[in-house]
Amino acid sequence: MLEMKQPQDRALLRRLALASQGLLQTQPYGQGLAGARNAINHLGYIQIDTISVVERAHHHVFYTRVPDFKPAMTNELLVQGDIFEYWSHAAAFLPIADFRFSLPYKHAIKSGQTHWYKTRDQKLMHELLARIRSEGPIRSRDVKGDTKQRAGWWDWKPAKQALEQLYMEGDLMVSSRAGFQKTYDLTERVLPSHINTQMPSLEEFAEHLLEQQLRCHGLVTLKGLTYLRRNTELRKAVKNLVSARLAQGTLEQVQVSNGEVFLLEAGALERFVSPSSNRMLILSPFDNSVIQRDRLKALFQFDYQIECYLPEVKRQYGYFCLPLLYGDEFIGRMNAKAHRKTGHLEIKALHFHPHQFDDELVIAAWLEAIIAFSQFQQCQTVSLTQVYPNTLIQRLQNALKSLT
Image (cartoon, helix red, strand yellow):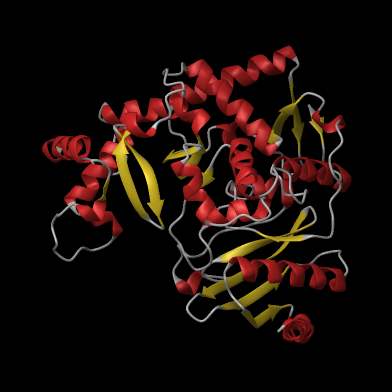
């Protein structure tokens, strides 16, 4: 096992990880709709999230990697049959070519495994399927249900629960969506006819996960390969596959300074990896590159937690802090909110952590990133309230004023 504990070693691993995520290049997958299609095919999934403090996470991930991406393109990919919605480690958009790897979980849910609901209204589910079969696609709001005041999103009306259960079991697919209003239709009417629907074996699933994770991350941990998947047999199959690949010499292991062991393709470190630049990227908290927090800390020494799920008194950086990637290092986070009605981007707090970079270069990179980011939020004005360290606040505020 190769030990990589020196700063130059960690920099090489970081660049491999970021290049594999498409975060070192300006247009690694192309532009616009074609670029978005290529991006998700490479990344393997893009997590869907409901939080709308800034543009939603699934659009944000595309935006970071694909020039000229527009949020409407996500639904366009869905309608065209290039992607589909289902559960990965969370709700996600997935490449349509990977559809068969959603089948094991659908089969488990249909066989009684609980995802959301312990009880199922089979009669209502049967009625909804019959209605969709005869009348066509349906939205949950098109179905009359219990109109009593509900406690929250987890207390959906029975019709919504039944639709979602049919979706999780695989009888229905999402054929389109407008914001978070999903339209459901029969799987046989949504799924393109050329897509492989054969149930994968455990070994095939394990191979799919390994190849996907190595492709989009460059280097992975054994735990990360089955991140948030609770299938014990699948984990065992992945472990067996990794052991076999290590024995064959097609995989190798490296150990970083905190003791974490990463797997990567043999020879990957000898290949050219694009050097980092002075570009800054404002990432989503649900970005593929940061969602595995242990990995993020081991590779980048960036201890990150999204704080919107914490009580306000326990928040250190703010409700919805966005990681700031400068070159190949995470150097800060930004707590922001887009006020769409007024077209204003409010930066409540900007935190720069101690770093070795020239402040002027960092400020210039941040300003360039903010211009593009505010346009993505459809905001015409930007304000900045707090900066840490506060010695930078006057320069940053003056620079922002010069943009308006």
